[in-house]
Image (cartoon, rainbow, N blue to C red; front, top):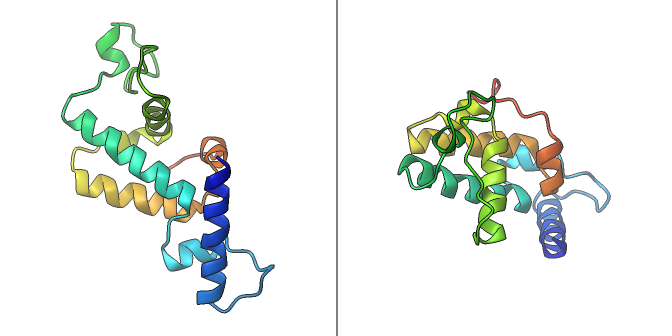
Length: 141
């Protein structure tokens, strides 16, 4: 995760140069202004898109496909405890955390547009921020 923060610092440095801002000026509002994803948000975006493409092709299972219990997480992707790479498991966690309105979208280009807009507005500086955020898509749709 340390490299992520170094790349984010470089992003902020470039944005300050582009917009002629001082070194101590916050960039949190500048990312949405320029419609640029922060590096952590870009990683989350690519992970979510990858998992959604697999879900649309029915190559990964929902919780409802594993068991017949009617639970609140039945429409989330099932994370098996098998030999899947940690990166894949993290991508599923990102995907499961986005609003269910997004996960139910069948049009891939609309999904990409909504998720990108959603993540751009958040200007996330870390993966932890993504999971701590109260995620709602009412302003994005």
